[in-house]
Length: 106
Image (tube, rainbow, N blue to C red; front, side):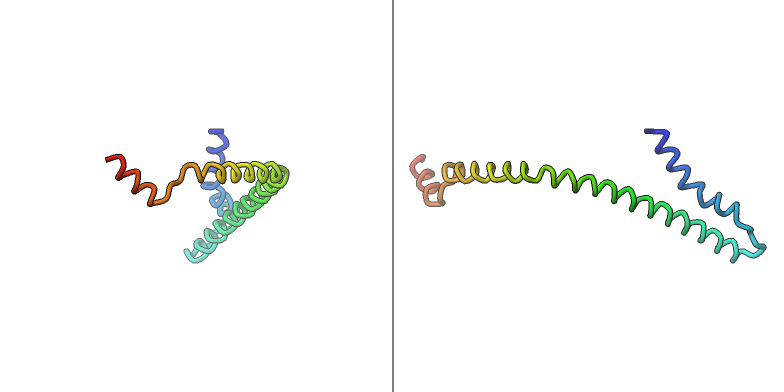
């Protein structure tokens, strides 16, 4: 895992340099700025498209999993709601009941 991370970081750093090295560098600085900008634009575009592709695959997988488990989740949710509805009247007291308990305990 460490090597993959290292390779990814190095490719981010050196890919514009490699693209720039392949381009013909003119004598003025304006041409160099244009070449560097185009190299970074190409690099950004590549990584953006790769990230979108990876995200589409991950979201597709997660969507399938959620749809597959949706009936189980809904059943569990309904069970929890039923348990809360049963337990709620037992645990809650009105403000008046709490006030009476406070007075009677003193």
